[in-house]
Image (cartoon, rainbow, N blue to C red; front, side, top):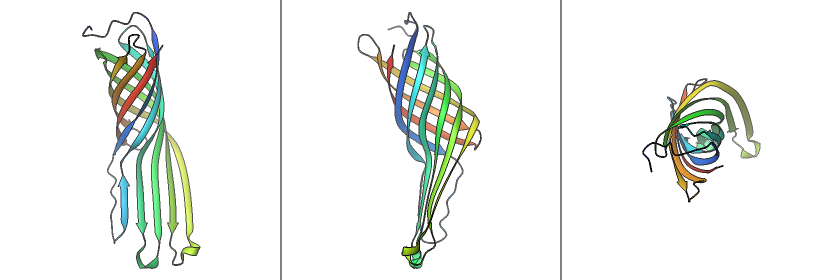
Length: 194
């Protein structure tokens, strides 16, 4: 196999599905003022689906969407016969425009931009000394972030003689402009080229 990936002699398209882990980086701090149970999970799961145009050159261009959970926050307080519960989660659905370049063999580096739908949800049960009269709150909101950028690296390995089925891994760093959030995503990829 040649060192540089220039052995493709015609244009291909590819469909790739990915599943993996996302790590969320920010400066969010959660304080425990009294004995409560507080759980902040900044490491969650995500899934993606991408459609890629792969011409005979080393450049490929694609569109990608998916669903990712950035973080979840769980707060439980049942001191002094008073029960409080709070669950907050932040998810996003991106529409990425990816530009990748094959460097050597099956290894690619890429950059891109995206529009992202940011979704927040809060479920709460508030003050109640008698649990027969709990006050429940359910709040959902969403917004769109248009200035988002990412860099990524992936390794895609062809399977079989015809090399149509693909298996690989991808790492992506994403900056979300509207909220100044940062994520690092690790995904296993499975694809089909035609």
